Image (cartoon, rainbow, N blue to C red; front, side, top):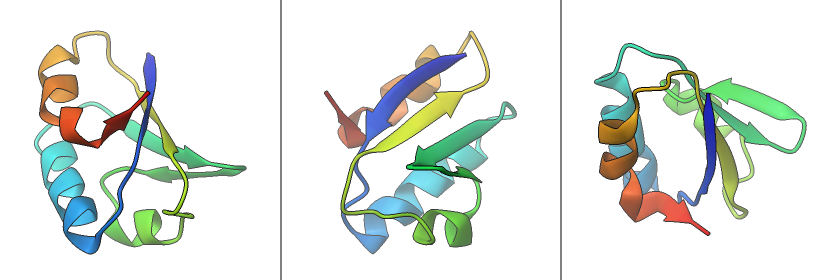
Length: 76
């Protein structure tokens, strides 16, 4: 499992992120505070506080292609 932080500042960012995640078979969770949602759920993502960075947990060890696709959203 790998973890990193992302920012989804606009509705288009959320749609693009969900489209990327949907291409992969492994599970990806988004965690904001004490809430965790499936990253493939656009409604779940909109239930989070998108004004702050969101923690991404990738439940796969071979996720380099996925990480390279979501690079525009990653924050330090």
